Image 1: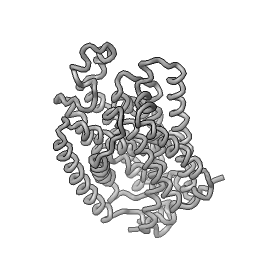
Image 2: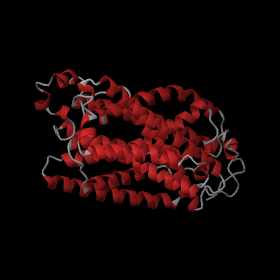
Image 3: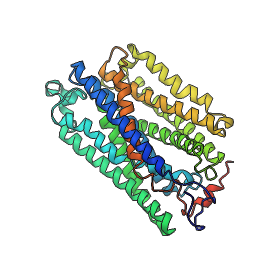
Length: 410
């Protein structure tokens, strides 16, 4: 299908719909999700460990794909808030990522419901026997308990779903009406939306990941989690753009200049991630207060020290050298490969965060890890594509689109 009217700002004869391809991909995603998660659950039950292995693998996969949708929401809100024009042409791709929030909420029940019914395999603070007599956990019991955890998760997802739905609905509406007032309205909403986004994302990072080590705390943890979300979205935008163009879509709208900007931002947030990572570690190392070092001790003085070194090298040193070149950023196939690499090391980073809580002394890898990632990924794909079949792949009547189409990096 092509752009239907000359009122659109998109180039003439541009293919702007996924159409039947979205239906096929959704079917593949649902099939993969059900089969792989089903296999992971059965395997987890067979291990006879009260589902500890499965729950940690599931949390890893869930937070990984949650970071994709959160990165997409950040990108959408940021563009409206700053009136940025350079990457407006890719905004619909980020809006498609945010369409996965309802499915992610359903997937969050895989964490909330076991907690609610008394499963103690994921968070130590959910075990009354562990809390009893532990003055730190007793002091935090008013916050770290299953009912309040469930309420907070409901609040977070309500914020994310309302915001993502608002911006997506107005954006698609503008495709039809071309009303510039919609852009002004979204810009006004973007300020409060960014505040809500920042608070909910930070606290979700505290609840889902930092509370795996409940004796430990870091006020910078929410920013650390956000950095991974931001890296993810710029890498995904480059990969999605490249895949769409290989299928014959948006071949004229998205240019090497947009890929260049994606690469610059992905590289910038990689540096930001490294800065936050070092700042968190340095302050805790210098203070050397026992309860503040709980997170780092197993990751520095057991087998996990090798994973810690690998995270530094693979997540910072390698992309710092590999993605710095202008040539890489302006070569779409090469940039897409680097972005796939970055998504891989982002998962590796989350593995380093989650799995020492399951096995503090030894590095653990199990097929359930891969099944959960594939299963949650398949269902994420199904949720994200729920709007992609009928919506255009670029915001064709956004007033800033024409400028975005002619964007040139300086």
